[in-house]
Each structure stands twice: as C-alpha cells, then as structure tokens.
Amino acid sequence: MALIAIGLLIVIAHYLVKLAKTWMKGKYREKTVIALTVSLALAASLSAHAEPLVISSGVAGGTYHNVFGANLSKILHEQRVENNLVASRGSVENLDRLGAGEVDVGFTQADALAAWLNHNPGAAVETIGALGQECVYIATAVDGPIDDEDDLGKEGVKIAVGEQGTGSAETWDYLRTLESDYMKASTFYQGGIRTLAQVKTGQMDAFCG
Image 1 (tube, one colour):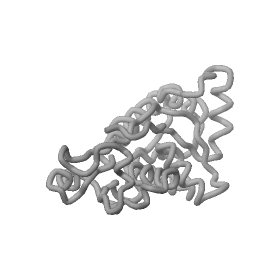
Image 2: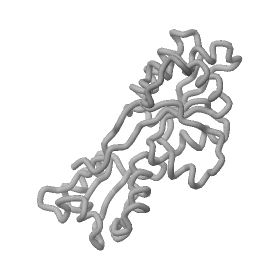
Image 3: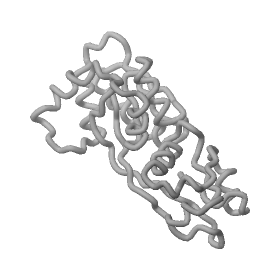
C-alpha cells in the first residue's frame, strides 16, 4: 500500500544559491522545477566554477544515482560544467556532506530534509527545486497482521524501514513524530531483498521502502 507522497528535492550548498536563483528569476516561476531546468540553472551559474562540481546522489545501482544523478551529471557536462558524481547511502549522507562542505549538490527527500534541519539549524544548504513526488510503500504479507496504516500503530508490530540514513528510514522516523501510535511498532533498520523476503516468511510484519 502507498502510505504517503513525499517530494524529491535537489539541494545545493548555500554559496551557490544566489547565483542559481538569479539566473532562474523571471525565467521559471513555477514552484516545482524539473531536473532539466535545475541543471541549466546550475550550469549557467557555474560555468566559471574553478573546481569540478561534486554531486552526491544515492546508492550505486539505485534510481537516485543511476538515473537522477547520471542525468544531472550528463546535462551539466553538456553545458561545459565539469562535475563528479559520487554515490552515497542516501538522503541523510547527502545532506551531511553538503553541510560539511564536501559536496556542492545533493538529492534528498523532503521529510528527510525537514528532520535533518531540526538537528542542524542554520545549516548552509538550500533547496533549489523539486524533481517530483515519490510514494512510500509499505509491503505486507497477505495473511499478516497489517491491513492498513492504522495497524502500523499496533503494539509489537515488526517493521523494517531500511538502513539508518536512508530516505525510507528518515520518512518512518518523521512519521512517528506525527503519529505517536507508530512508536508502538518495533522498528528494524535494515533493508534489501532479504529483508523483504522476511515479510513473506513472517519474520517481519512490514517493509517500508
């Protein structure tokens, strides 16, 4: 079942904000900016950037790295902006790298950004645009104890949410701040195909991904 729709954002180091937004002003007024527009905004702003731009994407082999990251890198190269695409564990590591000044651009889920900013107030990062909406899916066994989202608040329900630092784990942690009953569930920070298989065998009641 789809639990909630969340925004996928592109976030940049604060020192790039003025340049990129100046270029975008008057050209693109929609709140949601597609990846190409963001890429061209960065390219126009950073054509004279002395060092290669570093993009922190996501897990190698995953959509954030192989699709969003690769496409952004390709477009920037076409606009003569040198850049390096680096894999990461997910949204939180992208934000940590941005906050530490290790990278210039990163992808993050909106709720992961909200949670990260709560722990890092005043961090020198800013959202430049949205790439779209994603759904968080909860996989459950047909004959398991979970039929709808209300059942996620049952005492002792076992839910795997992905490794800590991933977008799905951050989404679940954020949801628990909004719905206190979800705190009753037993949360396991693990993911992957093997964990999904544990839902079928009954070792887990649900998988958030």
